[in-house]
Amino acid sequence: MSMTAAPAGKPATDAQALVIDAVHGPENRPTLVFIHGWCCRRDYWQAQVDALRGDYPMWVADLPGHGDSPASGTHTIETLADTLIQALRRDSRGISGPVVLIGHSMGGAVALEAAARLGPQAAGVILVDSFVIDYGGLDADTQGAIHAPFRADFSAAMADLIDNTSTALTPVALKARLKREMADADPARALPLWAALLAWQPDALAQLDCPIHAINGSLIPDSARTRCAPWVSEIVVPGTGHFLQMEVPDQVNAHLRDLLADIAAWPAR
Picture 1: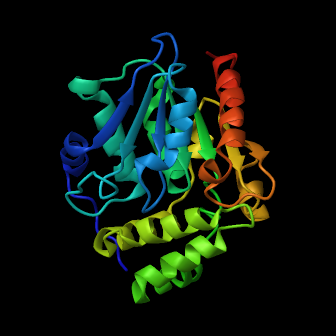
Picture 2: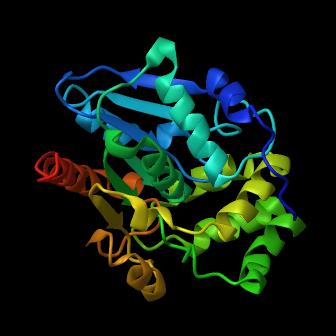
Picture 3: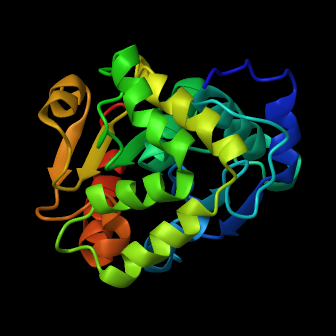
């Protein structure tokens, strides 16, 4: 499926309609911005928000066309990042201090793009299983082969995606929930975004002047690990699948706390 350019003004339009959960926290700590994945929603971070509540200010949104947030058209990774930044800076919820962007799956790509745009305001990026597909290493034929099943039967392909990114640690009830909720996405918006994600190049990795960490499950391909190694420090949670923040939340939360402490102690800050 071909991608059309994002209409001018769309990020601003969608930023105004973005559904956000803003959680208050100490003013002397960075705001944590949680970014969900493709066809996911903000409450997939609920265990992390509950664990960190009171320790950090937090900002959790449904991306345009996901969950409760409408979209004025199709998006790319770059326009999603632009939308997030415009929402971060709008008067009603403006965030002017340091930000740590925490992204799962596609949300990690959006986090990297947003951090590159935020410049010094980005205190750090934490990727949660973001490179389970080797973004930046997919040729056009591979992109087309991954995309084609979703064009043919969106619901069936989504179910296969969940099955193929699960492990023995993935609860059966969680798999059923993910299949139901993710297949409920509007293919007219989800398919162009999927194509844009598969074509996305992670150039922002080399552009950032802040710590970049990854909390990964057991399915990250070696090619992606090699691609990210010069810029990303990695923690692997053995045996976990792609939705590890929901599979083993206590482990992920403990790693998040450690990484946030590392970001706070980063020498350049």
